[in-house]
Length: 79
Image (cartoon, rainbow, N blue to C red; front, side, top):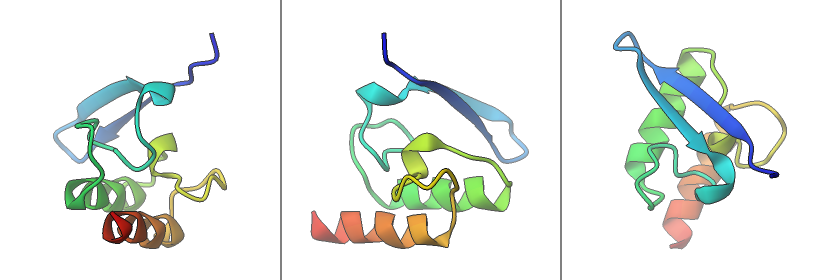
């Protein structure tokens, strides 16, 4: 099985999400089946908290950063 398990916690609420990345869209950080502004907000939170989420690593460089935010916004605008 080639599925990659990943998880992250968001903010002080410590709301944790677990997912299997092969079953989700790149950029769909809240796992709702759509890439939208909610995912951008989550990615910003992940970056500010110093965490990593594979689904938010749009350019697949192993880091969540501003480049991923720009690429995620571009994905949304292209839709």
